[in-house]
Length: 446
Image (cartoon, rainbow, N blue to C red):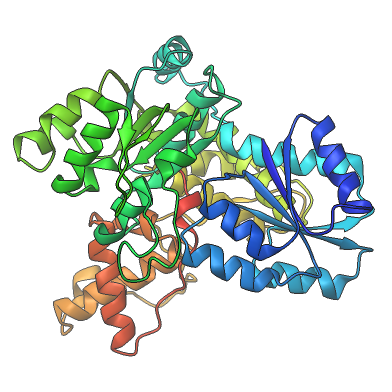
């Protein structure tokens, strides 16, 4: 766990740092948000950033997003003033910690971030062979290709491998190849020198250098452009990279993991993916089964997510009712674990009483219109008279809304690529239709 403290280290904030160190965290300190941004830009990675609330947290988070640096922010300040806490949360902070710090609270925050990274629930017999193989190869430096349908937990598996490796105390760095525009991905991976291109206002260390000594995850690598695949292959083979605009190669020591929800052998045959890169990455292949084949895991996963979102929303933990468990276990789960997570997030917010009842379990593909005695039209009758374009628009917008704004999950349910979905949503927004706001896809399960 790497904790970066931003603010004046003396006094209560310094005490929080010492408490975190005693709990096993590696703690760094920078006095200003500008300095913290420079450090993160230059490859000083962090799993959690604790920022003094008197600093401009909103501007700091905006700057991080502009640099595509994803890290959870915790605000902290003297006392427990609710207005201050609300401002910090609205600015984008994940939590507000009052100072002087409570040792158990600091420990709980560190544990929550750590567990979120590494928890992989696997009790069903269908996934046991995968876990046996994962435990066997985790200590090695072999490249691993993790495959499976979208939402099956590929990134969580990658973090699990890292946590069990000899590099566990070094950085784990993830880059989503599908979420970053092609013209920016090269700089994101390999970094760039100041002035290398328009907008390169300062040197930026790429993900390869940020992961030095640790593990680099290339998420959804099948989305990478063929030209960039050639540069990636050279980096893996030669164990050195060239920054964009740089003149000297930079040596690297990392383990590379990759994920894909596509059949890469078919992508190779279609000449959309380099065969030599495929073999370089596919030293070991771990294929995660879809959730519909992991029926035993549905209930413990649901309970885990219910507890997680109850805590995140300041609600009491509640068990699932028998009817709710049955509904979850008999659903098709096209969106896999990610769909289950979203379902339980909604259920926690909607549930009333001492249990999470079946009425709070809103499943995709089901109708939730109130029952009436009046006859209803069949599906074909409802669609008659409407254009294909309007039906498609309503389906896409309602699916994104159902997924609480998660574009990746919605694209999976709709059976289209994430890029197609984004283009459609931009078109609808430009045409004046209300489009649900997106949520951070970088934190979604792989």
